[in-house]
Image (tube, rainbow, N blue to C red):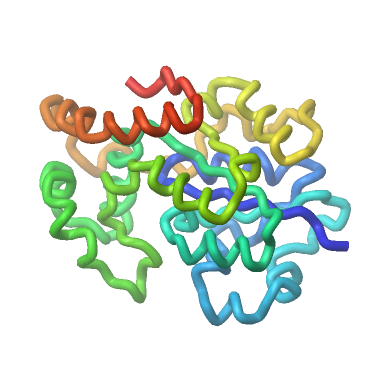
Length: 250
């Protein structure tokens, strides 16, 4: 029997791993394994050519009574080719995006790059000179640029890109700050996926996949204000497009 599928996309460092665990424990959901490295099936042309049967057999099947299959590959949000290929193979797929305050997300993304040896500049240089560095990365090592700290926070652009391939009702947006603080947000995710909303995940409230806070200096207040102004029009478009309040993003 063909099962329903959903995909958790980023942006990176937005809490997608936390969302994964909220789903993985649910008795009606089977999440693709392994968690790390992520499957990235739809980012790999050779894998994609193997087709749906290979995808299902390779990443699922250990939870036969599950009703829904999910995959978390964070970079999916950034590639139009992925949206097109998911729609081509699984046209009724559901898409879940996890979004976080774009400045906090950028800081976490920077620290992640530092921890993994991809970043050697200061946070100030990395943010203020992103445009000239963003394409200067090892494509054999990274599926997307590790330096897209600010561009990755223009969430509305990615959502509108996916809406070219999926109906709005196939797309669900989770706000990270709400997901970790409000049970209603998690229940909304389960409701969207069509599974039991009364399930309470043991992962609720856990700190998962955290960075070390000691790997970089804090962001200067004047730069944070500059970034607030830079993100403001994108966040305003996101609010207007989705109807989300997102009061947590100060």
